[in-house]
Length: 176
Image: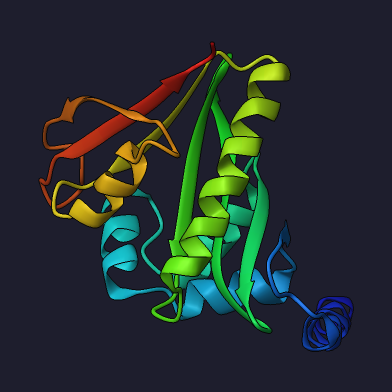
């Protein structure tokens, strides 16, 4: 337990000393926990109804134990968005992201640019499809995914996919 606490302290010092003003980097444990604990209510509603995790602590554990590298966008020194891409099926990647209420349009512009770069790397690395899920009442998220800069397309609706009975919309982009 002491090793984890020492690692957290070291990462807090590192995070405070970084000058993040426009790039996305591999997330530290402190940043992941910070965004998860402070995630927007709408993100938590979506996560808690589409994942097995029922607490934010469980969600952090799931993220850390998953097959995804986790990246972070900071607004100044405050981590505001974390996300990643994980392999759900052979050749298929699923993107995910959560944010705090402090995330600004400018932060999402950087994330969009970064995701385009990641899409190209994923396709060069053997993926043929990248997808994302969204609950229907997240119109802003859907507009972002369908934005010409991100280029995802709406594929369909998974009826009663969520634990609370809500549907989920699926978006995709294909190699080429």
